[in-house]
Length: 242
Image (cartoon, rainbow, N blue to C red; front, side, top):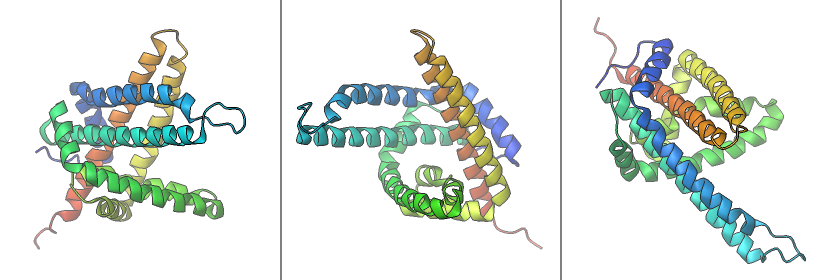
């Protein structure tokens, strides 16, 4: 197992190095995103119900909407397990394969599902509180729960325990977590803007845009996983002997 980086700057540089040597990390997200997108395209017309216009029955619209939500949720769980599991393997061994993602899904899908439920509940609370805190509650939500999925998948922690681990790490390691959160926000915004711009190019634009976005998301996952490993290890190490 490779030693975690000594500082945040090393995490970002090492994450880029791992991504360039393990581009296979972007494959699950691309494939899952494509499949979910196709299903979304096929089901979307059936989710529209306009009373009195006979577009579709309310039952058909409700059924299609439920199926679409379940497919999207399953795709998200798959993508998180595969990408985070492969990122963890890359940090620990220097290389990764799709088999690492498969093992993570088979082992930790239930943890991720429970974590998603907990995160959704926490998100609703954060949104409600954001009105009274001028959005600060929403920012704190992303800050404190940034390590939830690595804790659930790499740390193999049950869903709510993974949220607790993330909260404790973020609370005790404020400076590095804050730097990572801000940098990730900037990287994601810039990456999505580039992806959206490329999407306007005929034919190959959307394909290139999707690849760029997935590269950004995979890089962000590597950064979060790297920091999770470094901060988690720092917290569990015994104090030096006097």
